Length: 224
Image (tube, rainbow, N blue to C red):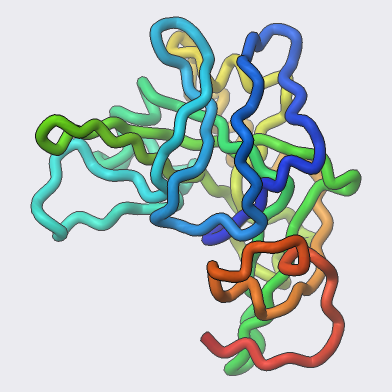
């Protein structure tokens, strides 16, 4: 799964030539958490644009607080789950990031690790989004797709976000894309990531500086 990620805009997000996109909003956050609003890229009115959306997909048909707001969706089953079906068919998005956090469980301890591309470039995670209304208010929300982790990361966690190759960004956003071959291909990891242990400071969302993404090798207690 993916429960925290970073996008600090240290490096510019560079879309492919066939994706016309306005300049990214200024949004620096080293410790992005569910329930917060984050920038995503969506296709609206035949144009690609930025939008703020809450991490945790809000279902179209809510029944009080009985339905959870999932922060992740498995790419292998996303078309089968009623809560995701309309969004994956009609409302797909890109979530920019420069890394994500995952916790390795060893006996009774959890050790956070930061995962990133080898050049620490900005990348785009595949997501789906939804728009709901409460009275006069309209809210957007999103969830991140996941697949099986690459072999070099399995010792940390068995799942990881779906990271799209730039050449596929436009197709992912386009409503006419044939989803079956796309989802089948991305059921397996298409990129190579690196990871290292970081400080347990990342456990608290209040800690939101560059130090939470820095390598940490000392022994630490990380019980939640």
